[in-house]
Image (cartoon, rainbow, N blue to C red; front, top):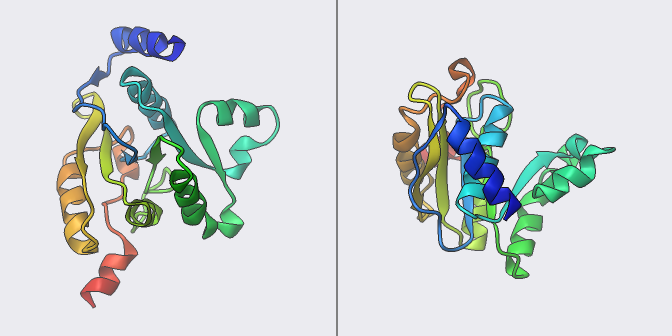
Length: 192
């Protein structure tokens, strides 16, 4: 209740416009892209709270140290140990199979700096858990943010990423200079 009230006040006072498709009606992997600033996180929380989506999100384990730990966990954070990042997919899939219901917010660019590839964890989690992918976005050029379509992945990584690329083609993020084109390393392997 308090979260929804806070989000209503935020969206009423914000210069950002919430332009969104309806919230997914089942668990989903929710992409937060382009991820070019820490402010993206607050916008995604605002979207989730406004649409009453219970969310969990992945964050580097250092965010959960000290006094920030309980706050980050209360906000839905799941710490990721980068030294053993391979366990992330299986840990999240295990939570889902155990019946935990949530939208998993993933920032596939991984860092807030431009790179060559997105991280593929979101794709593997969605495929292994049988979850759809909801395309969340931030677009500074139009000052809009929200949720785009929810798509079912086919397992054809190139075709799936073509759909995702088409959606994000005109989305700039908060700091466009740090935007990474939606592309997975696995696409290169699939083409070769």
